[in-house]
Image 1 (tube, rainbow, N blue to C red):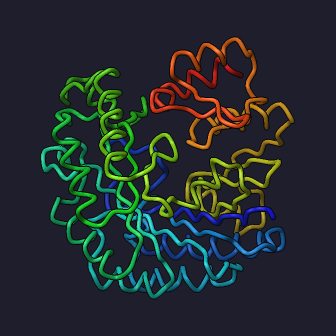
Image 2 (cartoon, rainbow, N blue to C red):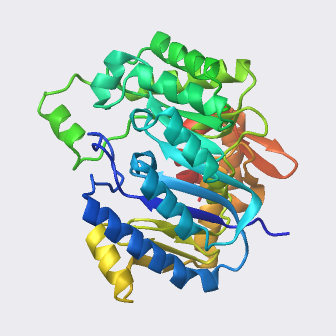
Length: 366
């Protein structure tokens, strides 16, 4: 039986944009937020005839969906209630710790959210300052504890590769997240957009130099061993979970399960076609409300495109990929001998070392 599709909604609002962030967002004046909700309702209306299967997951991303007021959250829930969502669906709220208090979390819980993805990045005050984050460690502690009390499945996002982020800081961050009840951890590297503010300031010498690739790779390797020792499974390159707490929605992306994306810059996948919405709120919303195309691009995948996608995405997953998708078998033999891949029942599974080289493996095996 095919897996149920996912529903992603891009909430393009933030209290303040982080200097390294490459996702589309803006602060959003009251009239812009009203415009967003009107366009979102229209976009969903137009899509529902093409998505008749109940959605198995809902993911509110951004931006910071947690920045929405109580009234805006209720308005969003009313719009989304028109979609068919499975009774046992995973419903994730992506959140900035500084946006939340117990009452707001309680409202989101009442509106159906059952999973919280908390963008902590680090519990280090110096690290938060280095990354330009607007929340404090105390905000993160308060949000995480309230989420656990209210019955959310808690996921915590952590970052490595920032100036001063040494191994002892990483270990403390990991231990703190687990002590707060996290069932899922995302650990990823700071990645800079060459056109972004962080990169410009770094290039101008206005920020301390970042650690090199080898030091960052060593931190990621340490995170893998640290979390494995505590019972978490690395089910994707950057994601770890206790068994049963994997993010079902994100797995749809990596397993090529169809998903609908709504909102400015949101992506969608039908199984054969990939597409993305226009990014600026005004352009997207005006197109939707006028009944005009709101797509930035649309691509119909050829059989070879599909093979390459399955190869690339499979190398990001602990479950791996069918060996028949790989190209040169002599290369496969070499990667197995080097400990980057394992063979198991006709599949190729990346090792922890293979995860660090996933992009390289994909290029060579394609």
